[in-house]
Image (cartoon, one colour):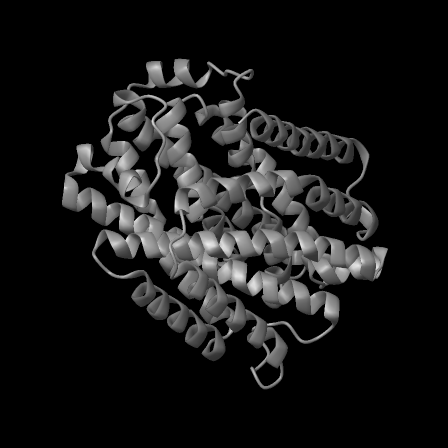
Length: 417
């Protein structure tokens, strides 16, 4: 073999390895920037300008630290999060963990479906028509596709979220004022704290931990894939926060500049925030693409995660690698959740209020979710992959600060608000 050919193979091997592993981290992170997260970022920019922008950057390493632990647990143990809690701490604790998952998933599912209904209304499509098309399509997709097929669809749909980056770039914001305002943080204001808690809950969600751990198991990743799985997770963490920052910048540059502290009460108002830079039709189209990508990929992830979580604790088959005849409960719960969510959203739901409230609820649940994750990383792993030494102390500090801030901000924001 020639020298040039050997060099080419050397350079291509890491890329081939990454492409083989790529998926679980990127999918869960694209789902992380869901309809509720987009709404929370839009509210943040509209009401506080760039003052919550720094938080989006700070959350990148925290999000990676949390999700990297789920990757380790899934690859090393070959078990889902609920299964692992049941085996290590007992079924009662597993049910507590799945209860937090159920709350988070139900709220998220209603938010995602409401987001899609709002997009449909922008173009004159009734809520019930949007729900029939979306719910019906997702049921057919999951019942007929493998894990790999569902993952490819989720990645393709989630790519539409990059439309928000284009919008932010078109605002042509000067970096100086943007940075100065982002460093001005009014910690004493309960309205700011409430949205800060919502942003924390919009980035670190209970269902993300369950989904990514199960996904690396379904994808049959092994210890030799760990490095590339970490890269997959890191890329996803950066991408999801870039999208959150882009939405915040776009609304801060429009509503936040022209009418500071004005709330956004409808999807229409959020879409209108994009039109000054792109024109009414282009702005609305890009918003529709971004919101559709965010809501659809999150709907897939959230509904599958809820069905898997219940299956892990109850002991029935809960993988997309099983045929519906082999795992009727798994597919049945998935279908029932989507149908129930579609029926509820076909009624009149205030998407903006619901979306922000659900993210605050996620922040309140963080101590339970992150507490279990830390304990599992300490006790369910062994050898060099066990969470130990100074890094274990560092991770514990990050978890306590993140969960503590989210809980403090949520309680104070709710109490005063």
